[in-house]
Each structure stands twice: as C-alpha cells, then as structure tokens.
Length: 343
Image (tube, rainbow, N blue to C red; front, top):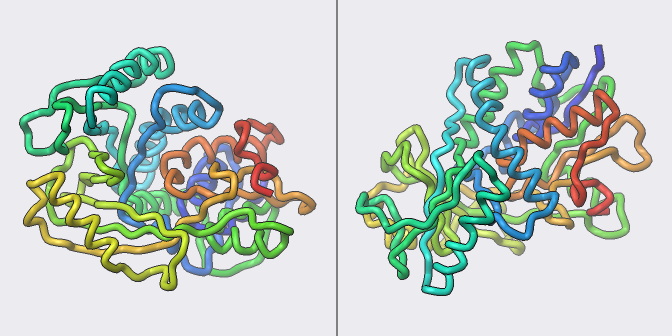
C-alpha cells in the first residue's frame, strides 16, 4: 500500500486525499491550523466557467472539473452522511448593451460546440422572479454549467468522508511516504523563500453572508460581484481582490460597498441581515493557473497550490491528475499548470 502525507487540509489537500484513498493509498493529512483554516474556510463557493470561446487547455480542464463535480460531491455526501452544499443551479448575468447582446448570442453557438450536450449557454429575457440583476439590454445570460458549494460544509464533509476511510488529520506529525505540499499561502511563501523570484503571492478577499433564503435559485454575477444562494438558507456576497493589505483577516468599507451593491442589484436583499463578515488571503500562483507537479530537486515531494478563486471548481480534476502522477507516475497535468510555469 502506497503511503502519502499531505501537508495542507484545504480544499486541494482534502480532495487529493479523497481520490488517493479511493485508489487504495494510505493517507495522512497534516495542517497546523486544522481543516479549512485558510481561504478554504471562506463563504462564497462559486463554481463558474470561463466564457465558451478561445478554447485552451485551462478551459478544457475546468470544463472537465465542473462536469465531474456533481459525482465527486455526491460520493462525498454518500460516504460522509454530511451535506457539502453542492448544487448545479446555473448562473445569471446581465447584458450591458446591444453590442454585448450580440456577443452573448454568438456564444450560444460556441457553447454548443465546446460544451456539447453537457451544458447550455442561452440568452433570455429578464425573469419576473425578483431573483435577477437589472440588465440594461433587457436580457440575461443563463448558463447551466455553473454550480455552487458551501466552502466550509464541503470541507467538513470531505473530512468526515476521509475519516471513514481511516485518514488521520492532525496538526503535526512526521512525513510518511510520498509528500504532497498543498499548503496554500504558507506553501507559496516557503517556495518564494527558496527561489530567486516569487512563484506566487496572497490576494486578500472580503465577503459577507446575508440572511435570505434563495436556495435552489441560480447564482448571480453582476458588476464583478458574485451573489451565491446557498442551500442552508443564506446568501454569500463576494469578493474583493486586494494585493496590498495590512491585516489579512479584517473587513472594512470595501466590504460595506459590496453589500450595498448587492442590495442595489437585487432589491429582495435590501433588508436581509448581515450574518457574517469574512476576510482571508487566497494563494495565487505567478502563472495565474494552479501549480501542480513534482517539486524540483526534492524526489518524492509534490506541489499542489495556487487555487486562488478557482480552487473549489478545479479541485475534482486536480485531485485526479495528482493521483495519476503520485500513484501511477502518469503526468496528465494540462499545459500551463505545471510547477515550472511559476518557477
């Protein structure tokens, strides 16, 4: 039985452990902060695709991951008995003007070509439901590929599922077997200290949770803002992107502005109470794609980092390609995702 130590209990580390144990490996996870202690313990959880055009390896990989997420999270739910808050409910986006409308309509055909029968991209009139952003053109883009997951509930469900398979999750311990470094921001900082140029950095994000039940509705993306109706009867609003910050976990007027923007865009949220304000720092690799692969000059050590805003959406496929590499010595990592792209 192959032994694996995973350094990091965020979404990437937990997902890699899940797939590796599925293939028979013996896994232990070590994280000084415990599960979802970093940005994986956030509140947003938007799983949204790139636009269906200018196709490349990154977009194809993301499509595969979003399509496999439903089975991935269903298996986690079935084994753990815990609800991860996953739902492929789609997404609505407003259309600014006639030019944007023509572009959106042209993407209907490219989505049919690139997404096939797996998902739709359509243009439709603004529905009279109250759960839709204003659209100057009078139409919205609806895609059926977007999904959502509750970050904390998803990680908690993965922890419970892994424990049924005998995986230990501890705050300290010695490495056994192959070692996967999925250590988020701390992992990037460690790599930066060992390289002649930075391989990545942290980007702070602020988000909020409102007390409004829109469960089952599509997520909304308008004016750069994600509005996510979680299955637990809350709505998540996020997020900022701050390269410069003094306090990684404090919230400020930037979050106040996001909340007010959400209330303005979706009037049914006008009186929804703010249940939580959240801030955290997300690991962003220099290449802007996740960093995956062997750690150069450290045999038996691997890196899985740089999830940034797409970690939850990419995690199901990242886990598979890392398991391919670690357990079968097969490199199925897509172009641009290799560690060398950020070194």
